Length: 397
Image (cartoon, one colour):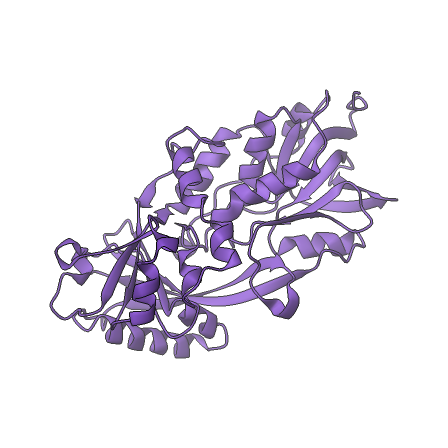
C-alpha cells in the first residue's frame, strides 16, 4: 500500500507529532528509526514550558515509596535509570551521547532519624536501588558535624535538560518544523492540519504530545476524550554562591518529599538551586512573597550551617499536564490513547520526564506498520522554518 502522492497543497505523512518537548522528540527518533515517514511540528521553542521546567531527574520511583511500601508508580518506572543510562552510552533506543549528565546519582536524606523508612530502605525490596551513605562518604554539603540525620544514595540520576533537547533535536535534524499560524480541520473521523498558506498536512496518525496544549487541539477538533488534568506547581529558584552542586530529596511527613533540590551552575559563577517537592505543591497556592519566605525558612532549618541571607530568590509557576485521574491523583505510568471519534489522532502524555521512553512505546503500540510514502519533507522545509531551542526558565531575560 502507498499513500497518495504529495501535491503542492497536500503533504502526506505516516505520522505527524505535535509538540517539541522531550516526549515528542524521543518519539520522533523512535519512529524515524523504524522507517516511518514522520515530522514534528512545534509552536514556540523546543523544550519550552514543562520539559525545561523539570528538574532533569531520571528516577526509578524510589521517591514514591515514602509511605514505607512499594507502589504501582514505583514499580512502573523501576527500570528507567538503566534504560536512560544505556542511551547515554549510545547503546539504547535513542542516542543520547551528546546529553550532559549533571549527576550519576541522587540522594535522599532526613533531617532526623526515620526508623520505619530506614528499615524499609534496607529491605530486600529495594536492594540495589538504595544504599545508606556512611559518614566518611558524605558529599561536601553534608560533611559537617551539624548534620545528624540519615543519608541514602539512589540509583537515580540527573541530566542537563537543555543538552538533552539539543541532542534529540540534532539527531532529528530536518524533521523539526516551527508551526506558525495554522488551523485544525476535521473531516468525519479524520483530522488534518492546515498551514497558513493553505497547505494541508494529512497524516495516517497525528500524535498530540504537546503537554497542556493537547487539550486545546482536542477542543478545536471537537473531541472531549481523553481528558486532561493540570497539576500546578510554584517552584523556587535560588541563586547563591555556595560551592555545592547537590541533587536530592529531603524526607518529610508526607508521601511527597518535603523538598527536592537540583543544582544548575550558572555562567556567571553562581549556583542555581531549583527547589521542588511539597514546597512547590504548597507554593501553587501561595503568593510569590509567601513562597520565598517559606523557602528561606526551609533552607535555614535544613542547612543551618549555610547562610542564604544574600541569596536571590525567585519563583517559577508551571502546570504539569496529565491524563485525568479519579480524584485528580497522580498517574502511575505514561499515557497514550486514541481520541474519541477520531481514528487518526493519538493523545499522549509522558506524565514525568523519566517516562518519555514509555510514552513512545505506548504510542508505537497503537500505530500500524510504516508504509511507503511520499513524505513531502522537502515541501515542509520550503514552507516552515526550524524551531529554536528554549533557554532555561531562569535564563530568560
